[in-house]
Length: 169
Image (cartoon, rainbow, N blue to C red; front, side, top):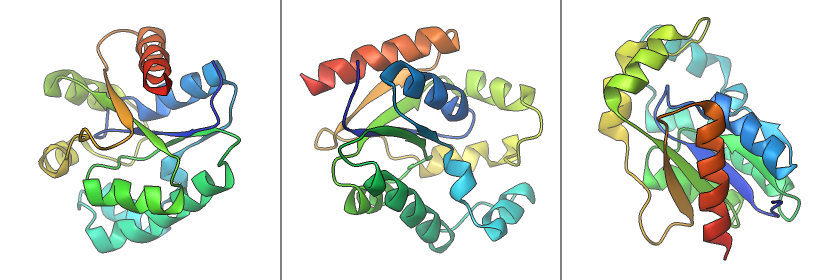
């Protein structure tokens, strides 16, 4: 399956955006961009210290992701971004109107365990509560699909590809 769309892999920290994103991009035959790489150093310092980002912190980050996605319009691509609020997704769509969202969802206990098991990531598990409190799931009028993160990365990717294929039809 190939797509001219840019797929934004979204969800709270620990859902596997950085794992599933590259697998999905490979399956679709398009490039992958790691959303965390678009954060300015001040955002990473804040999160590393256990301080949740405020909307003002996120706006330049969302704009950078939107610029990347806009540059891939008609070519396709996959980029990760928590995109937790509708307003954040609206801002991404303003920069890249054809973007579709893949919302990685799952059981909080599973996500917390996966976060605890990862090494060298700046996002501490202490911020998971704020992530869930901020999360506004995709609405019916938003182009996108939700996929559960239970199972192996390959199983999750297969479900994502199937859901995106159904969305395109």
